[in-house]
Length: 139
Image 1 (cartoon, rainbow, N blue to C red):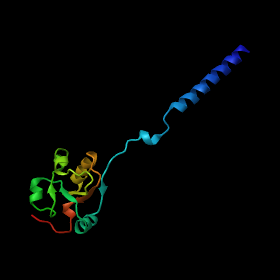
Image 2 (image 1 turned 180 degrees about the vertical axis):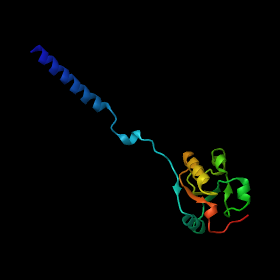
Image 3 (image 1 turned 90 degrees about the horizontal axis):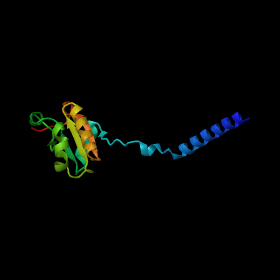
């Protein structure tokens, strides 16, 4: 009889421990998740529409100086992808401003756009590379 009481007591303690510790855990999974800040990828047609119809945006060319000099989108500011972290806050003080980003093929513009998002910029739109840009450029 004592053996059965000990088993029942042990089971009761185990059950109460499970209930107690389950109540102490944070079941709010939303607060445990980290929010990844990102940018939006848009088509070149959408980028051109923005350039033609809106104001107050900045265009970032994430290529090198030589690539920029060979032809770029009018009004684009050269900030090579590898300099974004060092130059962004000085050259782009408004972190909510619409920023359009491109490069040669789309790889560096994605890196630059994510770097901007990581720095707290909230309105970054990446639109690929100038090699597929069907609109005018300037030298």
